[in-house]
Image (cartoon, rainbow, N blue to C red; front, side, top):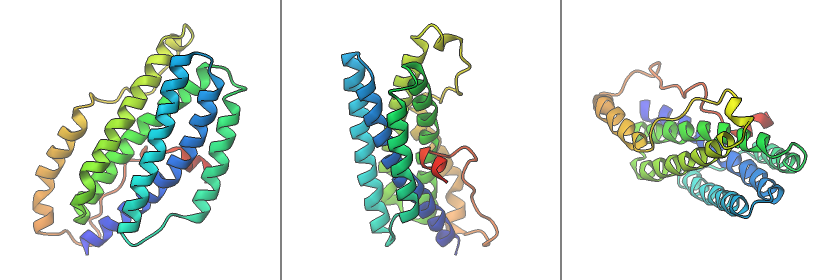
Amino acid sequence: MAQQQHQKKLIALLRVAYSAELAAAFAYRGHWHSVSDASERERILQIENEEWHHRDLVGQMLKDLGTSPSRTRELRANIVGRVLGALCHLTGWLAPMYGAGRLESRNIREYETAARFARDAGNDEFVDCLLTMAEVEWEHENYFRSRVVSHGLGRRLHLWTKPPAREMIRKSFAEYAFHAQPSRQNPPTPVDTVAAPRDAVVISQHAE
C-alpha cells in the first residue's frame, strides 16, 4: 500500500515535469534567439535541447508506469512556454537570465524529489536517470547564475538560494536511501506519506 502511494506521488510529479520541460524548451527557444552574444546563443540552445531530451526521458517513465501526461497541463505549458519565449525579446537581457536561473534551481529539487519517490515506490530503475537530470539542471542553474552576476545590476539583486554543490545530489540521495531502508522492509501505514517539498515547482505550474 505504501509503495502504491509513493508511485502515485511519482506519477503526479513526473506529469508536472513532463509538461514543464515543454514550456521550458519553448521559453529557451525564444531566449536564445533574443541574445546577440554567440556563446550565449550556443549555450542556451544546448540547454533547450537538453530540456527536450529530459522530456523524452520523463515521457518514457510515464509510459513504463502505464500512464500518460495531462492533456490540460500540456496545453497550458505550450501556451506559457511560447509566451515566455516571446517576452524574452521585450524584457531585455537580464530578466530572462534571472528567471531561468531561479526556475532551474527548483527543477534540481524536483528531480531529486522524484528520485526519492521512485526509490520508495520500488521503481529503482528510474533513480539514476532522475538524479542525472537533477545534475544537468544544476549545470543549467549554475550557468544562468554566472550570467546574472556578470551584469552590474544583477550583482545588486537578491538572488535565489544557491543550491548545494553538484556532488551533493547523489550524496544526499544515498543518505536518504540509507536511512529510509527500514521503511521498505516494514512499510508505514497509509497515513504516513512523503510530501514533496513546497518549492518543488517548475515552470508549468505557472500555467495553472
